[in-house]
Image (cartoon, rainbow, N blue to C red):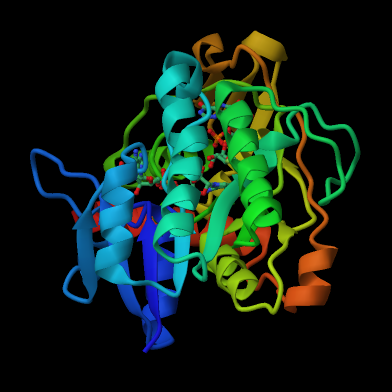
Length: 338
Ligand code: NAP
Ligand code: G4F
């Protein structure tokens, strides 16, 4: 039986990846941080099928012990301070986790078992102020946040350990991927969850958002974790862009999400004065609040995943409209059943 160790297992991707590996007969080990109140996050429903090991990617000793205990064939490093906006508030801890945490894992692997196949969760945020459209593996990087800068270090140290020590280390440059398990602070889930409050509870509070013009290449996490696994099954380690190849603005996401709830929204005004109103009733549903602007913005992301499609035979199954529908319906059902 193959064994995998996943850091970040309580998060969105960790949960879908756990489900995938368990369905393939893997023994799954999860690195979790000790909390005052026990909390398995998104893998609560799998807690009896996963072997949990306490640890932290900022603590090399804990990673060495976790590797010795789990003796994995594959390691997936999904642990991160993953909220871009918070990286301006905590730039140093973001760097410790998202940058140095990667070196800790690679170094632990080099010392304990250099045959382990390693996946690093890199990100389209590394492209930041994009230098080409669409972005692929050859596009130069220009990160725009402490998060993106730290992730770029993680990306290059993964390549460096591959080239220096011959480790089987892959970096997946994943574009935005969402799901019913997405954290509530990310813009997609913030919108779908607020719509559910409006529809189910009659909440009249408009959703306050920042930059409605920002464009993202959004896919579903369930599709994207398949690509992570495929990377570690290849004969040779490499880096791959994983994306849908479509881009949509935050405004378009909001329009589509309200449509799924049976509400047609129209946008009026511009910049800080822009509002989204219910076309039928005139009620204000969305307001711009500059509090949600970022010190430096990533205006446009659109990925070219043709290398992954060709080499890994990876294809996404869930398109943009289906993703939005799944998220809206899930949030409505969650509140109805609460
Ligand atoms: P997520 O839901 O925020 O999960 C992050 C996970 O990291 C949580 O399990 C968290 O554990 C864990 N973690 C944080 N700091 C840690 C530390 N010091 N030591 C050990 N674990 C720690 O993120 P996600 O959306 O699943 O993303 C997974 C990975 O992919 C992240 O590295 C993210 O940066 C990257 N990524 C995500 C996207 C996307 O669109 N979702 C795109 C590209 C790359 P706690 O429960 O203890 O907080
Ligand atoms: O949903 P977001 O917070 O995601 P962001 O910053 O794109 O980061 C996500 O994707 C990255 C991959 O590119 C991952 F690496 C990262 O870990 C994370 O998963 O924001 C998306 C866009 C931004 O341009 C933001 O300025 O939405 C804009 N936005 C507008 N109003 C907002 C809001 N974002 C948030 N979170 N909240 C708002 O009210």
